[in-house]
View 1: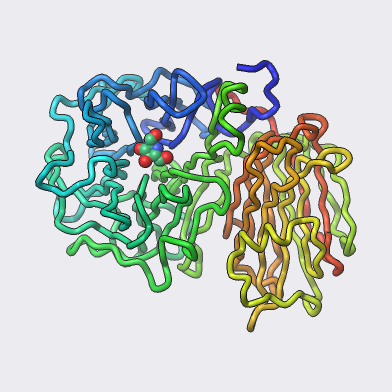
View 2 (view 1 turned 90 degrees about the vertical axis):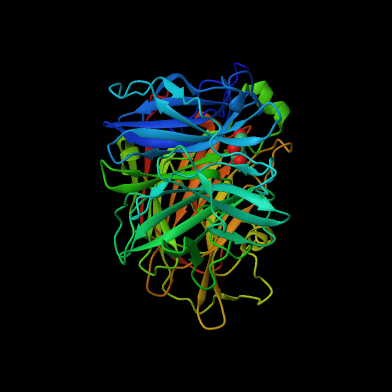
Length: 534
Ligand code: DQQ
């Protein structure tokens, strides 16, 4: 690896070197948090996949261990791909994961801790019965599209259920298997859910969320107080979509609520770069936590030069919004203990066309929280009915394109002369019968190195700017800008590689490139300390 490492993170999880992708089998066991993840021990590109393993007591600082799962049986000899942990009713964790067999078929295997009295769960044993689920001439399973078992859930009938991602032709499938003993698994006639024209469903995740509560519940929880969420990662586009709906445990089908879809206009955890995510129930703090992989936006040749690729997003607490129509996400509270020196801006009006620099924080390693209030919406630009795709709208109307109410927001990782910056901002439009808020993360000027993917990201945000403040929180970590809009109603993560705006040469600004004034209702920025991530 190169000595020049301006893009390594300070508080987002990453190993010292090499390629990482999907978070695998996250859990808490005897007070210790476990993160496993897809890892190439031999280089900075995907391959030779094992489950690397780290543990933590606070989800912020991490201790690395040897890989938990690596090829050792015929049923995983060509790779140990993604999977999940299930906690047995008596407290023992069990892993189901995808192995690649000698015929390069995808099959599902089981691994158990060797020693349950070791809270670090260093050693895992694979049962000789593996594989427990495999494609065959009888079951019509596509051997190259059969992977990523979910956390299993236990029905009131004493039967375990698990989902495996798959497809037939272009139809994405969440194949359902059931078992009485967790070892003998039977494929159900019908998938739990499927959707046409979505392609391969990777890394499905299926879990209950409480109605009217931020608390999380165990994955097997059923009843009138919960709705269910099904998330799928679409291999074709590398976007994730989730739906909220109803699970019928008698018929074992899941029906998304009206208008809830897995594609295009569907809901996403993140409208930027975020993939192969997985949740787990944190029984210590009764919350559900979401882990996701942030891939690089650099070219593989640059990844090889820097000697690593891939990081994990900050774990996010996830719960059902009051509207019951979407999820909410917020960085786990523990991350705030890394907050160091704080800078605060007094309430003030930010006039149209003006910006102000926020000095006194380490702008390449910061946590920034700002809230805007707009009092006069009269001059809001009219939303053209053809502007249906927020991401396209954000790239057409980048931060440098003047508007009336917006763009206003943050310029982060900005170089002194503004040759480089990443802009996270809002624009408010007048829609048919309500105001429409657009949230953008504009990477187009993020780096002078044009090899990087500098696509802009965007989403419409379900906030009423007449009655509510527009809040924005950005976690900035050298090559990561992870932004939470509307208190967690929408999230956009981006990877950026400034060439000038590095470390002490990175700056932070609040800007208003609209003609109308906006009020900064509150603003705080913290320098972030470095986490211990061995
Ligand atoms: N990554 C794993 C697969 C999964 C994909 C292989 C998603 O199990 O489908 O590294 O990123």
